Image (cartoon, rainbow, N blue to C red; front, side):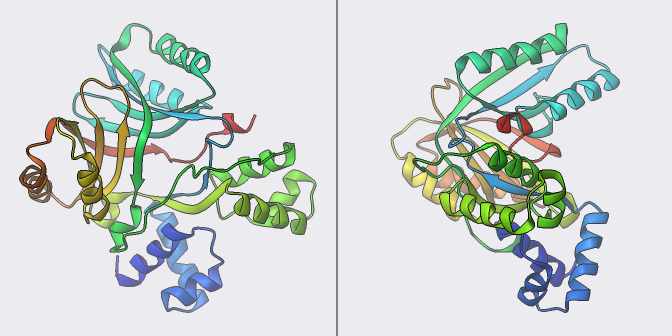
Length: 318
């Protein structure tokens, strides 16, 4: 992968729905070269998906983070359980983990009763193979900075507050189509919706202006660009949390962070992208040097594969 490929990826992270002619111009290449390079990045699975950032909170859904540890399970049974989670209508980002946990994923739910129903579905499917299963409310603060991989520190904002937006059935169908394929064309959508391309374009513009659609981005196989995910969980033991959050926002290594409410073991998940264990060690030493008096590291694990992207799953559009 060369600088031109990285330039394409950076532009797509900021706006994955950008037309190919504009993408080519921003990346400094011809349309033909941009098309060839983009198709190659898709074919070799450097780009895993193009997805739309949808304000699921405005649709009435709350996000919960989950980790599950399995026991007495074969590789085949683990694969079947993974497929079950991939196909679940309310599971969003899903990754395989090396460490204590087998999988980490998020749930989008309507309310506490809905959460309990989904958890029961998952535990019933796993049967007696669950060693440990945690569900945590993501509610305090979060940050997501995928473009840092390309040397650009641009935060992607999820679930900005909006008021008074009413969606009809057609709006929801459009969101469902565009959610996990942000590059789908107006003509292709019109075939599914019995609506003219111009009418669909107008509705999408309204969804963007209202804040329901908050942007368009991509999922990457980080290993293809020389990086690995590591997740660090820390407990805050002081009152300087805001200083730590500001540090995480500025750090070139931090790709995301989630602050949790009401968890007794840890308060923050910090996702870092590193090229090797030495880089991870350097980041941890830096963290301890700056904030050793207010943090305690609870656990560190490796996210080895993204099995489902961080797009809104189809259940939220029903």
